Length: 183
Ligand SMILES: [Zn+2]
Ligand SMILES: [Zn+2]
Image (tube, rainbow, N blue to C red):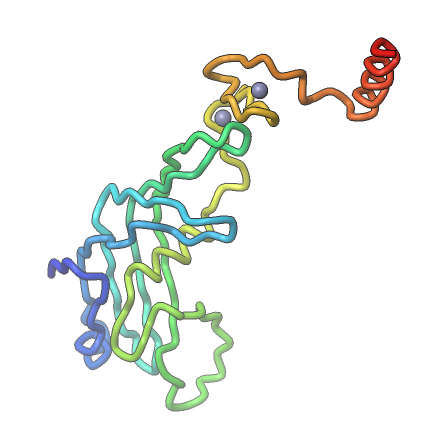
């Protein structure tokens, strides 16, 4: 087993020798995750363990394991929550066109993480984090959220703002009454 402290794995040896798997433990160097809605800090928990085996005819089989946490804000109160990603995946990649058409219609994964003879571990993990991204992140089941007026985290205390949950049509009526009183 090799140990690498960088995010690129050299595939040149494994690709020249079919059925002699490569077994690498590489540090996850990703420190932030660029998501659709923002940038999130990444806390690696365990090194990535990657195995790659060349099956011939351009077919590469990759197995990966990595445990890390991404700090994602709670959907309601925006407090950062460490969300654990226990990644464990298998990828079937075509690194070159098969020499002859074997007639097989196997499915291959898109390998934007392989560039020539190098496998980019961070890019590979990035895809897996994206796939496993939670639909919903809550700090707790009954998170009270935050005040939409002053931003107070309502789990940690209350504020003196008027109930922001009030129907806006009601506040119009309230304002009418207020004005009426002032006259
Ligand atoms: Zn919350
Ligand atoms: Zn408030």
